[in-house]
Image 1 (spheres, rainbow, N blue to C red):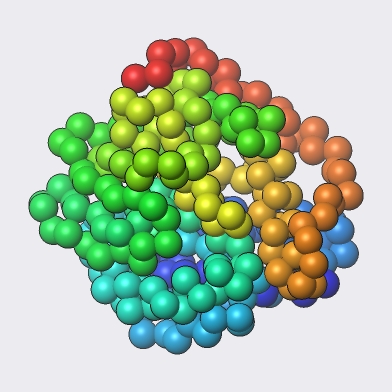
Image 2 (cartoon, rainbow, N blue to C red):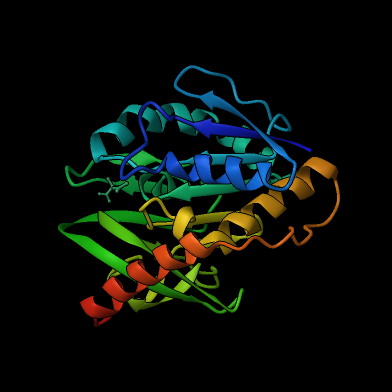
Length: 247
Ligand code: GLN
């Protein structure tokens, strides 16, 4: 199967190796006989709803977010149509913040968001940095990654977090939750990149994208050995545990 990916703003939003998530998805798809066709969609480019099975956006500093926010907000309808038609989406940190209603950065500028996730973000003075460990009850799994953000993300009542913080700051350093999930859309602060050390989430994202590509339901992908991936996870998870404390 050919999985069509729209990589939003790869030239602006790509820190802490976030583009590595695309490489992982491409390799894990190939190991199952699928092909990932990645199209960059940046400032001034058109986004056609229905053109992609998966949309991906990485993280970035306030400056880069300010350079793309207006363009992304102008694509809000296309993004909303794409995900309501079943396209999957993965957004990391700065990209995650711009999926909410707005991000007020450290200079007080209110950057518009696309509003497909029920949340908003306000930058604080202290950055929240370090290794993170999450418990994802919805999947019966854990996630390990790295966070570095000034933004405090506030989920609306009833919004679904990606996971409960076992170690780290998470969305805002006080709620005890990290990320947000709405159907096939996942937003998270976890860099690293995230997917090489969390292969189950990579496969979950691939399965959602494949479901869109085939018009069917998400199906389990053939299991892989993932020895190196599990080792990488263990190292990251142990660093997070050693860091200790939720805040
Ligand atoms: N600029 C945003 C913040 O500081 C996002 C940072 C990031 O993507 N790592 O919160």
